[in-house]
Image 1 (cartoon, rainbow, N blue to C red):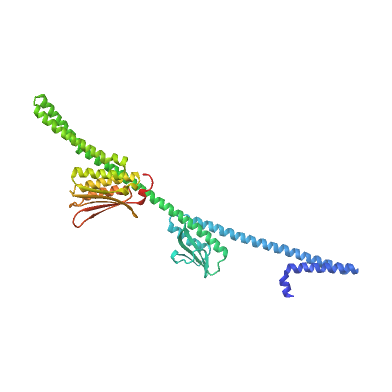
Image 2 (image 1 turned 180 degrees about the vertical axis):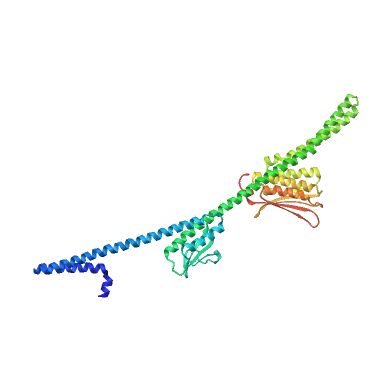
Length: 400
């Protein structure tokens, strides 16, 4: 009997009781017993009323339970929103992970909350562990580790889902913070490169101004004085003296024109624009050989892979390095450009005995930094110097 009561429950008993008494009332009417029929009807009505009361009470309790559950869900969601706001309140990636750990401990009333390093996380997906749960933290495809929560009360499946939701948001916040940090670093680096470029341009204009003032302008001033002397000699009838002065002035004019032509070639040689990087370096080598009687070899075909602006900048750097080498009076200068895993490596070597001046090395380093590259200088035991310039791989990507 007890087992039957447990099986059908109170509601079933009340319905069964009402049905039994209704049946008894019907039998009373059949046998003509009004008293039995009336008593059975009263009992059936009582059972039906009790069933109705039971339904009302049960439904009310169910509604109260649902209302409590909704309030609990609402409070948790409010806490989750506050936790998300706290996590996203910072832009530092490391602090985001620490706040996620602290907020998850508060949110799930955990005894402990730890960040497990990725190398210690065997299982990469959310899962249960003894006395707790672990949920993954990922920035894109990069694992950041696992968030491990433990408490005395068992975690339920819904807790695992909620913890996963918080971890996913924290992972996205971490990735966004890292991207912002990278963008800030790139912007700072671009600002530094811009400053370097402006400084390099100012230094280049300053060097050009000094060169023109101390070279061609001084020569032109001397030529003008020689013309004045020749004119005075002609006016006095000293024709032979005037002829010698004019011959000397013509020679100085030719030297000045040659200097200006070399300057024009150095600033931007037409062969670099018309025939390419390798041809321009070969022309520079021929010019050095003809002017200074120094053997210059060049193997710079790989430089053709560079973007246009990178070619111009590297050519200027090679020209400057070769000019510095010439001052050391070597018998041989070699220039090579090679593409490798590091990017583009340029070497300018010579067998001169003197050391390169520190100012010249700093000038080369300044030019290389504009290209976001690096420069090093090696001196051989038996003399000679090699300048090595390494440009990043992206120097050869796309148009300049």
